[in-house]
Length: 431
Image (cartoon, helix red, strand yellow):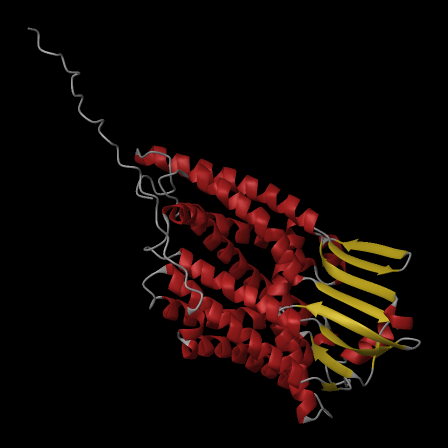
């Protein structure tokens, strides 16, 4: 009698554990309401107060005779709002009533205020164990700042007559070209623009500080940080060099132009040292300073290059290309000395990309723009823009940067060959 055969029992297939997906910290929006509002208020209001005090010092240096307390505070508020991107608007007369809107960053005030924000934010963000808490605190700070600058710009808007003691600004505007005669009217800073740009500045600073954290960041963000941290710092060196270049340009202007020997001119130059420096940097690189006027069908663009300024101001300005080379070179060398294991060639390529991206931003921040509206419902519009041509600046920055990157890479290879190290960084394999 045969026994029935049973099918062999196969062991179960070994199950492979599914790869665990990286878990991001949960983002609880309600933490915005319950977090450190006093700390956020400290940073936001200190940033705003720094800009306001710096603006007040500049206005006081102008000795504005005949301007009352409210008028003084209004002018200070106009400069403070401009430091964060708020256009200044007011009434003018040019064959009838009209409105002028002026956009110009007093970048010295902007830089001072944002430096205070950076210091305070860096201290406060360290208290949070993960990046989400730090990001939420940055949002709180931005909200307080937005509220503060909106209140400031809405409170200090008043009837203001611009006297001649403001560096003969009103006289020069009317006598030189007869375009805009400043008159009594309600002058104010654009609250929405100042709040929006100020919030953007604060969030960008916070993002940079959070990006530099060594913990709790997702691996992909850490990888991005390794790529962008060095080039961003090198752009910081470029900006610092531009400020120094602006100081040199201001001294040359003061020495060569006797009409500027007054405290009002000094105050204006102090307010726009970075603007002067950025303009001088790209003028030294070969870009033209554009004056663009547009009114209806009328359109005029004039461009002035370095030769114009050497002829009309001083031959000393022929030294600008050398100073431009120094600033660009310092920015590249700053990154080269910190070149990582990826190689100095890759770092120089990232530096070139950062330079191309930063150039139009810097040119925009240093420019001046005005819009004049008149006629029925402001349908007659005239615009004036003064600034470095962005496309010329990008092309020339790329050309200068490429040449500098080639030289830095070649020198790094030569140094590495002499020392017997791999030519991957300026100082060899140590990074």
